[in-house]
Amino acid sequence: MSGVGEILKAVGDFGRFQKCLVLLSVIPCLSVAFHQFCQLFMVVEVPHRCDTSWILAVGPNLTEEEQLNLTLPRGPDGHFEQCSMFSPVDWDLDSILAYGLNHTEKCSSGWVYPSEQPPSLLTEFDLVCDRKDLNDIAQAIYMAGLLLGSMIFGPLSDRIGRRPVILISVFLQGLFGLGIAFVPHFYVYMAFRCVVGASVSGITMTLLALATEWIGVSSRPNAVLTSHCCFAIGQMILAGLSYGIRNWRLLEIAGSALIFAFFFCMGVLPESARWLVTKGRIEEAKKVLQKAAATNKRSLPPELLEQLKPEKEVKSGSFLDLFQKKHLLKVTLIMSCAWFVNSFVYYGLSLNVTNFGLDIYLTQLAFGAVEIPARFACIFTLQRFGRRKTQAVLLVLSGLVCLIITGIPEDQPVATTVLATIGKFAASASFSTSYVYAAELFPTVVRQTGVGLCSVSARVAGILAPLVRLLGQHHRAIPMAVFGSAPVLGGLLCILLPETCGTDLADDTGDGHPPAQVCENATSSSQNGQVKGKGADQDNESTKTTYF
Image 1 (cartoon, rainbow, N blue to C red):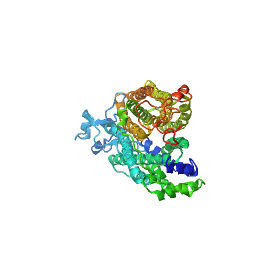
Image 2 (cartoon, one colour; image 1 turned 60 degrees about the vertical axis):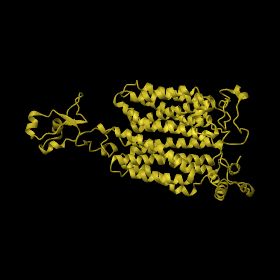
Image 3 (cartoon, rainbow, N blue to C red; image 1 turned 180 degrees about the vertical axis):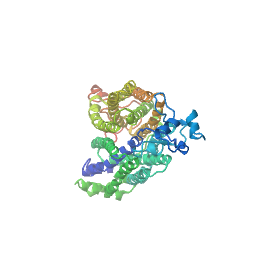
Image 4 (tube, one colour; image 1 turned 90 degrees about the vertical axis):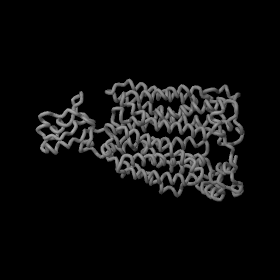
């Protein structure tokens, strides 16, 4: 083990210092949940009609009912059309009453909404009729921001450090989050949302890296579970916040202001000791390690600190190794597909919260609440049934639920919402499983590259999920059919993956097969055939990782 690794063990795997670090991640996790789904409550469907006030110029004494009867066509159901109007004419009122209007056109002067309706994105920027697709496009642009952020802030954190990147990301999220509340145009709104999405990636990804580099292997699952549960709690808080604040601009301010509380904690946010050592900043690393030890009420012997020297760069595997090695090619393709369909169905269900028929605030509350037991259930299922079966079954279950929803009549909102909640449970649990499974499948030298590629595929799915909802214009069942078919296929493909429960993780790409299966509940008889990765006998946390 390297010098810094030995010192970190002496500091303590999960003492008060590390617990404070996990506690610091609570605020960003709550804020991320808000930005991820807040738009759902800002574009609530309301009755609308074309603005036909032109006729008041020739008939100022017309009642509202007379105005509508003269200027709006009626649909087959007898109600006024919401997206079309009779073409304006240069006639006097008597001529209009005598001959009537027959030619229709799209709304040319905007729309009229109920006067008692609080300001929303829909009413302020007219996200109706031909412009209603902008809602899903804006959500896709936010998801594209997440992808952009992971591509920018990941390398940047390796160059300038974890702490500066977190500071920059928090500042950008707070600044542009508040800025969204004051945008004058919807296209500016979409641009600001893209920046917020990028900052969300910067915060979550860099905080995860920082926690990983400070917290011991055995305690990392608890830290990850805590962040996932905080994200779920954030979704529940969003339901209550949006219920109490119906004005979309005030809601945006309330949700974005939370992240500024993080600035009061920045004084205790440490830099990564491992990163400092790799950059040759030994004295700074010694100071932060001594501070961590003091917080944990541990003492570091001076001779141990003197052993701290710049780490030599470990030779990494190539990105091409993922595709040139036969067994790695299979793992890469299937896991990338699994992450894609998992993200696809997760956001497909989450972004459809307004379409299930029940109160959207209660549905969002249920969607957030169900994620907490889903995350905890992973601890049991991963150990009891292994990674492969858990991943496959959860993906297939989430897909089947979506397919069943397509056959539920529209007048059965309770059944639809219950099924959607079950699907959200399965998709959330599958997400936690995929993080563990992917990290165990890829060898150490290409682990970051492999997991990074899976993450990119998940981001792409997040971009596509809002766009697939646009297919609902042709038939309401099409989006759910697409969201359901993909994870079923992905789950079946996962059967082809090797089991990794209880295995020693491989260090290099090798030319053989993945580690043998030694999960006591899955394949206890195969322990004698276990294949250990290079250096597995060493006390190296990157090669002998127990996630759950």
